[in-house]
Image 1 (tube, rainbow, N blue to C red):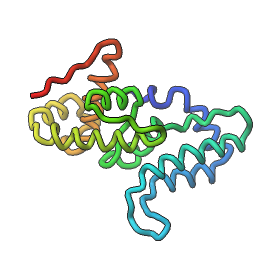
Image 2 (image 1 turned 60 degrees about the horizontal axis):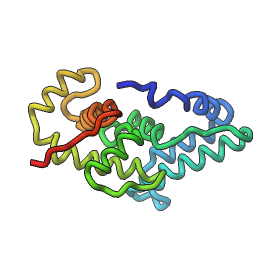
Image 3 (image 1 turned 135 degrees about the vertical axis):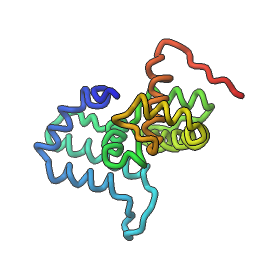
Image 4 (image 1 turned 60 degrees about the vertical axis):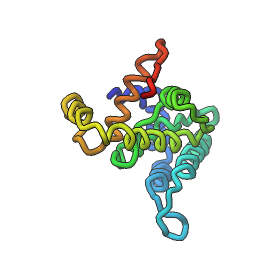
Length: 178
């Protein structure tokens, strides 16, 4: 797992927001991690939470000073959510998402709704392939002992897709239909 791919450029923007607008930036995380709607009922409003986090981060950054890039995008939101609760969320990479949509013949969502769509696709992948393959689960536990316990299949699914779709940038990936 290469975290530098998630934090490479945005680290300075994240640090700037945290130091210059700590309360406001903290509130954005509370909203991002909170699954309650305004009436206090549990909802699955991930699309709205991601969009709000990205837009409000951009506004905070503009308050700090003109021409300051926010860099708070779906990739970072996926990282934050995965660290918050890796049983419900996983990492995100736009390149992997686009390749996965292409392979599955799915229509791509527009930003900032891609992360939510990616989670749906990856959860289907877990249900249709990983949960049924005990050998794959055992291999995942052997190869990823520090991050995969055999229970949280989202991490294993991410790793599989990362290796197949991201690290094969110059190769065309083909899936055989059985």
